[in-house]
Image (cartoon, rainbow, N blue to C red; front, side, top):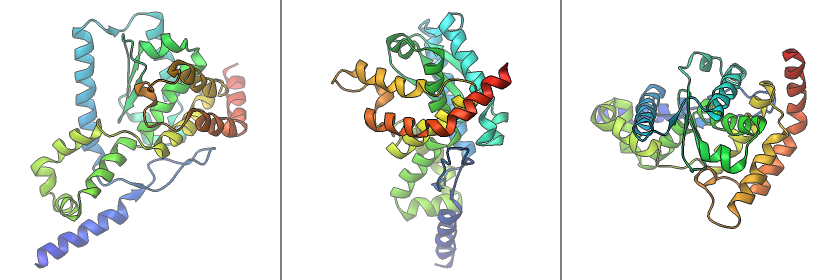
Amino acid sequence: MKRMLVAVLAALTMLVTGCQSSTESGATKTTRKQLLLVPAEAVNQQSAQQYRATLIKAQRLRRLDTTSPDAQRVVAIAQRLANQVSVFRPDATTWKWEVNTIKSDEVNAFCMPGGKIAVFSGIIRKLNLTDDELAAVIGHEICHALREHSREKVSQQLLQQGAITLVGIATGSQIQQGMAALIGQYLFSLPYSRTMETESDIMGLELMARAGFNPEAAPNVWRKMAKLQGGKAPPQFMSTHPSDQTRIANLEKALPTVKPLYEAAIQNRG
């Protein structure tokens, strides 16, 4: 009984200490307390494995694109964005960033925890993205990783399973008996919440501005998305996202805050 009480108290302590913000607020003041119960190392390890499996599959199907002009654009843009991540979290500058383009009609892009980026050619081609618009897409995805939204959604799901899971995490038994399996189950199956999507929109806007990409291009991406959707079911990239008009309005509201950052970046680039 005493051991159980100690475990419960430890679990409750985890709930308190697990509420933190994974990033600095930046100029756009985008921050909030997050529930981060799951070890970052475990999430990053699962993400790296999944990313590697995705690349192996793409290579086997001859869909891994490393030489086309679009693939070169993706790498160059992602590198410029990654060079600015220290404003939100300095430790991200030491991540082992990877950037790849996959030939596919899928309108999608992602950045897994730890900086594992993939862009599907369909989103570039079907939306006819400019460099600035592509920076908005990649910046949005990078900010999901910076904010550790994947780790957060797994933590939330585990919390919903109840105190037994929390006690297991606190005592270490859950990690030994299947924490990796649970992370793998929830990490890629659960969608981001609208709060997470909005955070990534606004943080991504600031990130692209600091990297010297015109932030006014960001709202235009979602206008193109809406046109592509044409009243049908949204593409995967837009699933669970806020409505087109809401996110466009949020981005345009934040433009006056980030435009000076863009102008300073352009001036510094000479």
